[in-house]
Image 1: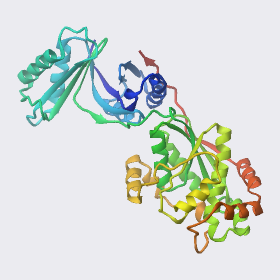
Image 2 (image 1 turned 180 degrees about the vertical axis):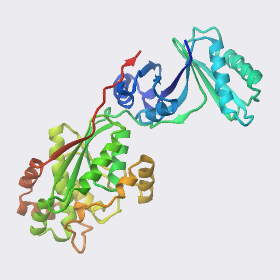
Image 3 (image 1 turned 30 degrees about the vertical axis):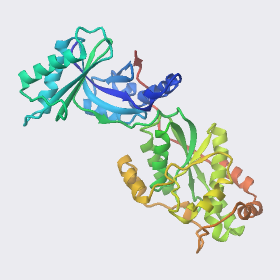
Image 4 (image 1 turned 45 degrees about the vertical axis):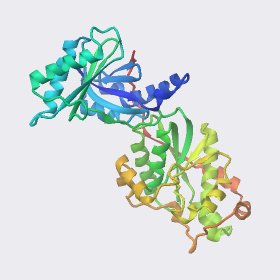
Length: 400
């Protein structure tokens, strides 16, 4: 076998699962197929105990690594090389890595060998010594077993040996889809895309619903929502955005006497519509970007009033985060540049001079009864527009 560049993907929480581990692995498989579609070229995915290796001659190791780091459920991503199952091939690969990593200096190194397949002519300690001697002799680097500058990992597997010199963080969390199906209420701001990402990272497959102020606002907020969902589609296949025009319904709430409770009334309208949509899609929960106390509608009293309008669980992954933490995560996620673009936010379309910070369900129920909320929700969903920002590509086959 000629040395083949590859990336090793190591399990995160999945490694701790017991008898239902295969359930999590099946969802992980779909995540890997989404990150490495067949359209990329000759993609090969090798599944091994607690890990998998991905190679593709048409892609650089850097591109393979970047794609691997999108996969939820993977805790470690290691660029490396796949070689013959012999001590000599492993040593040659380790020498090449040490030589590249030590250009312009003389860093210390350590070899960390382990055998997932025990039928190998050397024990792990013997393999460490054999490869380490080759690196010392041919590259001239000093050994430091306790705190090395370079750690070269050698993993003996069933049919081959994997050798890598870097250990980078993956997404972690759980594979998308293993925890269920949710609908994310997506605005154009920083919070809800980060909340969606956090929900995906805990294994939720997400659909998205965006409420636009049409016909009283333009399409700019829908464009932003589309761009945000497209960015998030890196982590999940077959993402769908449902755009719902709520301008007329918001005006009906204002005319119905919502007053200072207008924002909370709107939020109750949104969760009622999202709940109905979730029922049609088979989703089991809603996700919002609420952060406790960040704005007036996100006080504990108002959150309780909003929850009362919905029978599904409303998940708030960012409830304990402050704005600085959310914006920092959005920057790392790649959504902040989209979120900062100007748009016409439907929540501020009809904004009272003072916003209520304490409401109760009875107060809002009277307003909703006057405007006929159930009919409003049906009218909203009759005008829904379905968009698919992340079209699925043909996926790669997963070899055993």
